[in-house]
Length: 146
Length: 145
Image 1 (tube, helix red, strand yellow):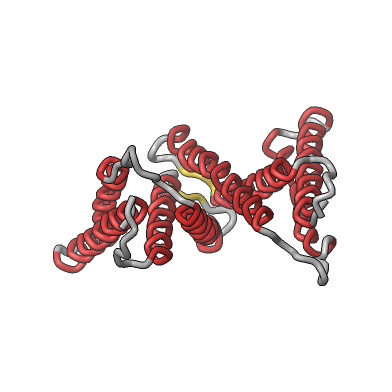
Image 2: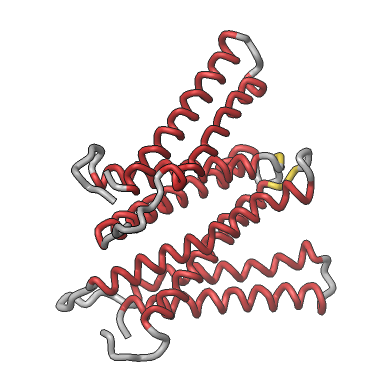
């Protein structure tokens, strides 16, 4: 497994852990504790775990004496970024237009929605990018090293 | 000039015309007619001209007997798309965070702001993509059909 794969795998694990913990926390707060849904959404605080993704370049450092990227790795990265941005565009348009349809053209939304949208879209980007990298290399190690 | 260049040039011209007419309209409505700024921004309706950029694939059709794309064209296309999205991301971050800092956490924004974000984003992506495509190929005729 090369460095890109390791980083993608690490990011995927972090995002999925954050999503599962958030979902569990919301479910527990709403069904077990009986909080109203708006307060139960506080369980999304577990998404903060995604901040651990920032550690991936430190955990998997570049080795100085080796070639870090060849043409194939670059092409895979290109494709992954393009796939991520294609999904980003769909999610971004949906996130912007759905409130307009639900609330109507003269409605207003809290400014808090915008940073939440930004974080949600950022996490979706990272998730798709990591998934596409792993799918293209193959999900298991095939002897690639870097 | 190849098809990608012609399309990029057409899109760039349409985008710039839309932007210029919008700015002129806003300025005329605000400074000459004396409308309040909020109503004068209606001049941005001219951005709708950008819809003509969708005609580019119809105006510059693929030639059946020729190779449509080689590796270099694909690389330029990928680079242009990446540049467009990389250009859009910081603006999206600013657009999403600015109202929070301006109005505070209890503030409200109109849903129209979200629609403007989509159209603004589309404008930036199309503009940067066309610019980078033309920059990568070169702005002038080089016989690279």
